Image (cartoon, rainbow, N blue to C red; front, side, top):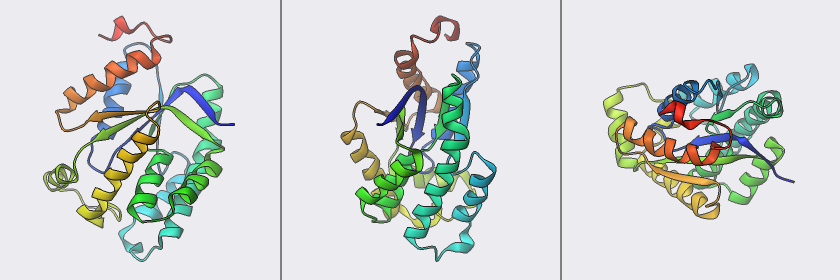
Length: 219
């Protein structure tokens, strides 16, 4: 049986979509309500998962096979889910994931060309069928991502170095996932200013969590 906790949401998007910025802005707004959500990133979030993250993003491992890559992601995810996410949810905390299993479906499935059914089976195994209640997909074009990458002038990690064709496949993958699960995914146009995007996210959050908060306090 799929475990679906209402207090668990995730954010997805291609690199440079601004999803991590949106997570930070959402947290600040929730804190004004007296709520301290727990933010966890993928890959990462635990001591073991962070070590795996270092391997996955290291440009020295350019020869990494796509099957090795997906299994490392799932290993990091399994540790995060069972060590952190499930215990936090069962204790009543609100959890926000900066990426979750949909990233594997998009990056390793659509991007790397692995069989999507196999990726989804691995996702289910690693998470013990845990799903976010809602998933925000912050959507930008690969061209906009490339523009932001140049403007950012940051050293690219192994995945960010893959090129625009790779990210075109990933974006299409996310769009397909949105179509497959319209009840869970919330697609947000991410090409406005961070503040403009944050207002769109907040309008949806109010509807999702309106039973838990007095949202007037965060206006």
